[in-house]
Length: 212
Length: 219
Image 1 (cartoon, chains in turn cyan, green):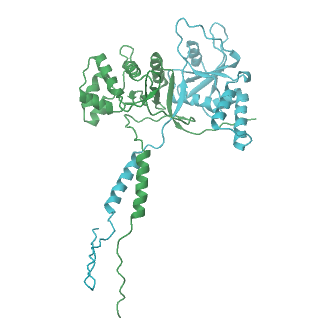
Image 2: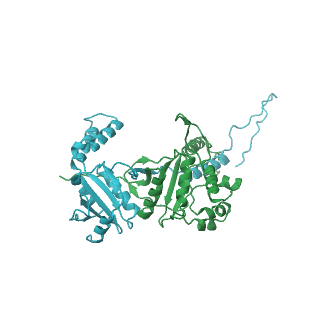
Image 3: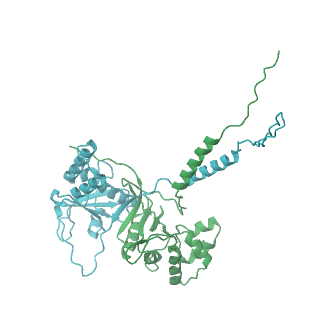
């Protein structure tokens, strides 16, 4: 769209006016280019940064380390995972020297499966955290997000509430997704003490005879 | 009947507001953009409720594909600290170049300056060290894809362990990010975690998709 620049006609009287150029600049090519660039940036932009779940693994025991403190069996729950999205749990510690071995209870990854079980075991802590959250939402308590998070952490770590200790174990057939799901359940159910540990031979045996 | 003469209007439309808007959008996109990294393989990450943002600087990324191939990636630049633990602004640390040099030394492969440069600018890779040279020099995308068979982790020739070790030496502040496919075997992930723990890494960031979940206590 080229524009014709009109020259001003000479006025009567002979006085010459300065040449006036039209102030309109043809912006079409510029707009074209901008459109192109915007499209390019829009398509190549990765807007949402990926989210991560943090996990800290227990440090492997070195020879010469003092033996770890015993964990109370009544608060310990083991979650065992296997192939085909199978998941089991049992209470206490499976020690081949001290029969009988605990029985595995089959469950699933759904809302009524492992989450129900975890919530039930972690009732006190979960309720406290929820109460605190609702109070903040309703405006009964005013605090900054960081304070709230710190308070929640304190409740989770409060030993007097006797929160469960969860040991997460997966065998070779389990999928990565399964492990992530279980760790996620810990976050959903406000369980603070959990660890991803190696599965023991006894537990592998238990899985073999577990209900299908 | 005399024809009604329509006034001849100039076909010109004032594009200034449009250009204004476009410039604004363009500026916005240019400033907020962070380019989608080139992916060696498609990875569907599992879901979780975690909304913590992934660190994007100074990281070592281990990718695990659906068929359990392992890819390695490391940031070219990152935070560096001086002796007093103060952060030093550093934009060209070229960690990857140093990493490649170390790896070449170990496997007696000499990389040319051009190859090092290419590696420095590259993204994730997953192949035994022996085919790295061919991968760097190849322009054929099909052949390049063929070469990506995953980093070997056998006990006899644990190359991933070496990559991780050299990466840790090159950039001791790097955080480890694991990007695994939901359907990858836990066995593979466990192996990687073991290798990491061998190298004194105990904290991991697992990349997940955000998915909100609510739990309610039944009375």
